[in-house]
Image (tube, rainbow, N blue to C red; front, side, top):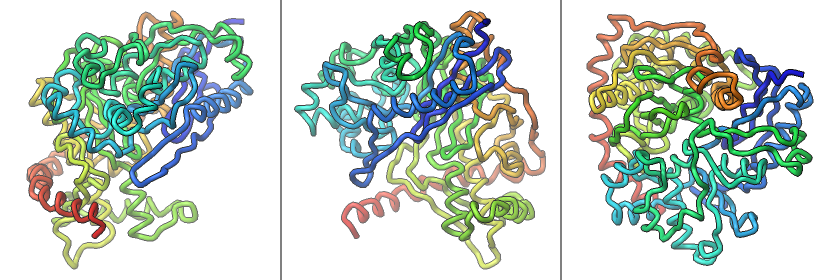
Length: 508
């Protein structure tokens, strides 16, 4: 029987998805399973590495009920980024993994940034210090759990841990190691300077290899646990954000993707390294470039929050509520009648890097209603992305010619049009639903020899554009002054956010 399928696995924060794809990028079978998450204290978020493995086993079991495993040519994994697990010398869990959204290390961000220097850290890793990268969670562990630190044999990313369980090989993709904030993005090796600051040897980390590399084969033991064929090749994958970009074919300069999921994340492909506070720099999954990433912690989370908490709708009982709200917002002109919203419900990442930032609604008047608020929310995300795109172009000289949009929020025609008008760029809706899984599958397809490289796999397997929203010149003109106001809004409120945060921490 021909090996005509590859598996793309997405081990995300809340669930594992395993999907089998054919050479044309068609999904043939899939399996899903949740991943438990715990919050033992406010601002702490943890998982067990065993839950990552158990969720993968369940998802693969469901997938393999729909296909003959003999058809498989290989698999690759994409993963939740910045999350770090801790293993002892026997490969057992020392303590629960610390997730990317955990905030216990805020003091450690300041301590390590003071030692290394913010500009120096950014020059090495492409990232501005904030609580997200795992390097700061490691610093927290060293300070607060010295016995666990002493016993730590391996600090692992999700991808690397699952590869270890599948193949027995201690290695990971450099596109999964990179978000942890220890990799020098020019050499693709762990930075001796950062390792020294943690008193951490490289042997306590997983060796990073290029995406698409053959990492190993499924062991007989893993085959018994998962149902996969023993000897199945496992290829290096990468972080879920970069995988989504590959999944919609963002493999060359001038192209970008925007995932309007719970968070709004956009990546712009570039051939050469650059670092700036206006974006995060990561490695691209094609192995030949970088991704300049914009990240807004609250994307479609904001619409869900407003629909449920403010407007009082229950989408499970009233699924048409989103369509009605969109119709109301569509009747409101660009600018929402003088209403401006700051979308930092969960803090600000680029360009402000302020975990104490919060949301704000400015300009409320008696004539405003639901449609104004709902449109202002969509405009806030669009204006923030427009600010980011302008900064990337200004800083790097990389033009952004088109934006491929994916995620739940991309289903909104109005939001897509607002994005086109605010950014001045065509917004193209991809037919690809599971872009992250597909990006991993593209790496497996290239590794299996179906295509010459990841870019060729993306060209052959990515879905077509199903809709395109082009900027309306009049609306584009209307958004020009609003872009300037949006850029000024956070700096005007920064001091107030800091004072409010101090009151929160004091319990007042």
